[in-house]
Image (cartoon, rainbow, N blue to C red; front, side):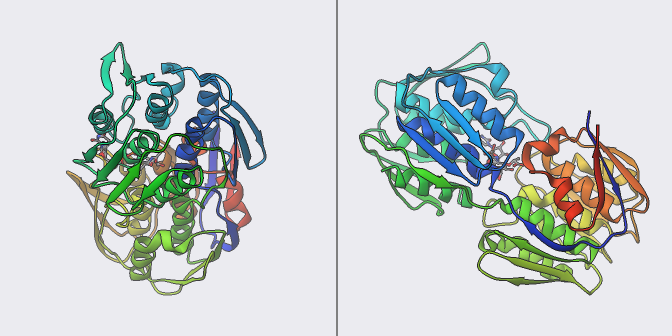
Length: 416
Ligand code: EPZ
């Protein structure tokens, strides 16, 4: 099982190119099911989750071919309605095939995704929305069995802002009969990216990126070519790393406007950040200041940046409170950071982080995707050599992360 070994103490210097966004690519690749032809996707990151999605789409009947960062998906042949447990369990976002399969085939049998380390992550809002559109939904033997002769437009209110719930129902609605209105919809850039792709396929969607999305169903969609937007969470991870090490780093091919909340917080911490259209330059000369953070749906501070920011606060000059409002169990990284000398007390969904002068290296274990990234960040500034086990979590969402950090001067390597 791969490990990552990091020796602390290096300032990161240089340029890093940001890859395509995992959380935009996943729904966009799935949207190929809504057309019957050859879709081409550029700037697709080389990640485990992308491979899992390609495997699932192939199982459904699509013909998938990958050449470097370009993925071609031909859905012109027969598509079958079942997504089995052994594929869905590898990646929860597989539930995104539910809406497209019901709207294309009139039926779907998709394994329930189950929970994960950070929370139960139910899909009740996905199912409530499909039922509102006229689908009959049954839960049997760990599967969702959905069917509808023809989905009809409906007005759907999300009790909780849900990213993949918004994506699933937007994809179900584009070929439904009539108008669907999604209220309290997610506003993430990945929602806008999916909507842009669907609109270029011929869908009629208004309001993507706002809390109210209106979709007028059309008869058919055509295949298109799409370029995946940059990964804002990968970019944020490198921004925190540059701030943490007091380095001088330029991020290339990124979208600064997707990172407003993080840029604001990092400037409060003491980072100096210069933005241009597709680059961000980060340095820090002042001491790291303690700043409170509360995760929120976009455009608030992203939950996927909470673990990384906690590392920064663990060596800041005071005390900060980090509150996690999106997932019920997203402090798993705290115990590992404590083993590296961090002073963190968790109370409910808040963590009080008292800055310490320096972290100390230790053998630690990755537990989920973003917690794994936070352990690399901690290793970059810890005294000594940190060994991170179970790094397969990292490979789900970060493309060649140790190579990118090494190119910035970090003493980091992967071992078998
Ligand atoms: C997406 O997950 C992202 N994944 C997550 O990124 C991200 O952390 C999350 O959105 C929040 O921004 C992808 O886009 C593939 P949610 P998703 O539905 O859609 C509750 C990463 O590290 N909820 O927005 O699964 C849910 O339990 C991953 O890249 C319901 O109660 O998250 C959670 O508390 C981690 N019922 C909250 O809503 C539902 O039907 C937000 O979840 C759906 C969600």
